[in-house]
Structures are given as structure tokens and as C-alpha cells.
Image (cartoon, rainbow, N blue to C red; front, side, top):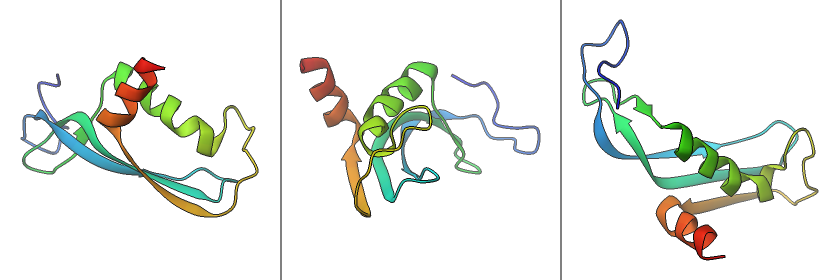
Length: 93
């Protein structure tokens, strides 16, 4: 966990959850992932995720945004995912 937020913020990030919306150039799909485990600054509310969480997010986004410039042909859509439920389903598969 981070010891300090940024040079401009005196906050110390604490364990928490965050929500982020992801868009990718060329993809008509917006994906919002809720309940992402993160270190969240109580002062500026900046959220920091660890490397493993980032990898899991990449796996969750791949069906919607593709991988390495290969965007799947999908219709425009907005998708909402609960991070913890989705990761549990990935591990069970």
C-alpha cells in the first residue's frame, strides 16, 4: 500500500473500494467496474490499484475492448461489472 498520495497531497491512502469507467479508442462499449479494491486517499480521493488487480481488470475488459489493437465488432453499449463477483466467476471457470 502507498505511504503517501502525491507530492501535492498530504493524504495517506487507505484500503477501500473504487469505481472506474473504461473506454477504448475504436470500441463503442463503455465498461464501468464497481467495487474495485484500491488504496484510496481520504483527502483527494485518488485511487491506486495494485498490479494483480490491474491484471484482473484487463481480463474483465478484454471481451469488450479486445486485446492489442484487436477491437471486437460490438454494438454501442454501456456495461456495468461488479469486480468481486466477476473475479470470483473467472476463478471458478
